[in-house]
Each structure stands twice: as C-alpha cells, then as structure tokens.
Length: 144
Image (cartoon, rainbow, N blue to C red; front, top):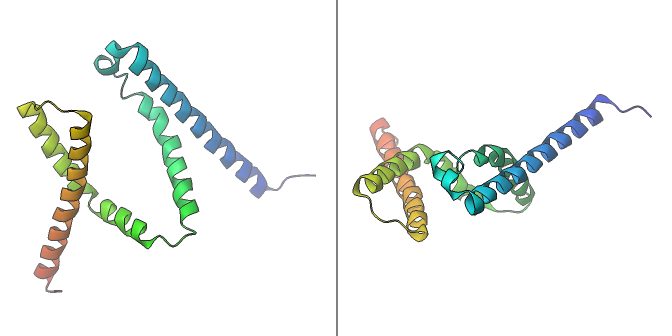
C-alpha cells in the first residue's frame, strides 16, 4: 500500500516535532549539568544561556499544543490576558530594560522572589502604559 503525499508530510512533521522535544530535553539535561556540576561555567562561559537555544523550540511547540488543546474550551479570559500581554510586549520590554539597568546600577541584592516580583511588575507596568498609550492615540485621532 503506497502512502500519499499528505500522509508522508504528516509523518515528517511528527518526526520534526519529536526531534524538537528530544532536543529540548537534552537542553534541560545540559542546563541541569551546568547548574549542579559546573557552576563556574554557568555565568562565565555562557553555560546558562546556550542550553535555552535547545530548550526554546520544544517548549514553544509544547505550549502551542497545550493552547491548541485548551482552545476547545471556552477560555475567553485567558485569550484576553495573553492578547493584552502580546499587545504590550514592546512596553513590557522597555520597562524590563529600565528596571534591570536600575538594579544593575544601584546593585540591589536580589533574591529569587524579588526577581519574580520585578518580572510581574514589568508585565503589569507594560500593560498599564500600553493602555494609556492607546487612550492617548484614540484621543489624538478624535475617536473617543
């Protein structure tokens, strides 16, 4: 029985997805190794950053699969939250850079909880600034 082109393409896509997941697991293993056994290379030689090159594609595919599965349920609030974060991504980035530069210049001792709090503040601040920016644009265009 001969497979048609569509079936071959589906199998090829599944193989690529599987490869991305395997590479992501490999990246997690490498990160674990650097973190637990070669802490000296973690920051000095890029051991903390390079494994994420392997982790990111598989993580994004997994998140896409999760959100595709969740799309069958009526989760409008989740879609609105992610849409707002996506709309405000540039502002979130700018606030993130500003806050991190401030932390580096002042050299505040940061714990894990403080880093996470700063990340949430960046997201909330970026969304607020984006909404203010949208309001100003609408007023300038006379649509409010």
